[in-house]
Amino acid sequence: MEIIPAIDIRGGRCVRLLQGDYARETVYGEDPVAMAERWEAEGATRLHVVDLDGAREGQPTILPLLEHLCAAVHVPVQVGGGIRSLESARQALAAGAARVILGTSAALNPALAEEVFATLGEQAILGLDAREGIVAIHGWRETTGEAALAFAHRMKAAGARRIIYTDISRDGMLQGVNAAACAHLAAETGLPVIASGGVSTLADIHTLKELPGIEAAIIGKALYTGALSLTEALAASAGS
Image (tube, rainbow, N blue to C red):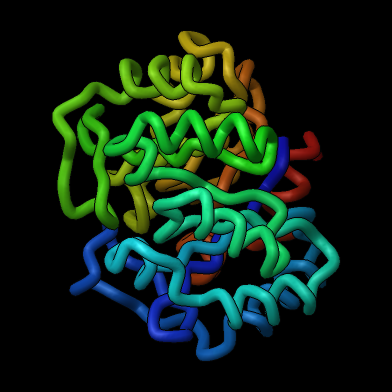
């Protein structure tokens, strides 16, 4: 199981939000590129970058920074936040991203989702963000009323190849990952799932590692607070 450090960017800085709340922000670094280099040096094999301003504004806001970041590391970078069109997805890929994450746009525009998944294939990932099992959009500020599993099935039919599942209630809280929801999603859809939100202990990693269909875990706040070291997380995911 892959361990993917998260780099959330707002105003050009590395930050973490509590449950996606922009009013509850903690700054963990002024230089996202240096942070990316740090995680690569510590053993990361992939990085997860989120454009928080883009998620709110509906278009990418970090393309020059993303280009610099991708050029500075030798591991693949996946990026989400503000990818609301095929053009913006292509812009992120042109900046050096290996994969783009489609969230709000997939929920609101199924035809666009189908076009992006058909055009980009493995380079596009469905970002499924849920609050109490209901799909959340627009930087997690609104919910659609659709159940997460129903949405996942719709997106599989539209061509989605893999899912990043984030339980918003767990995100940034260091209260543990919602492993049951991740496992259920993987079992019901048959798609590989990347777990996100609340991964904060070695026990979380061991639990996820044993679940069929969970191919990776994204870790954010636990790495930044020191609750987990990347070295420990990588060892746990490898079975050490």
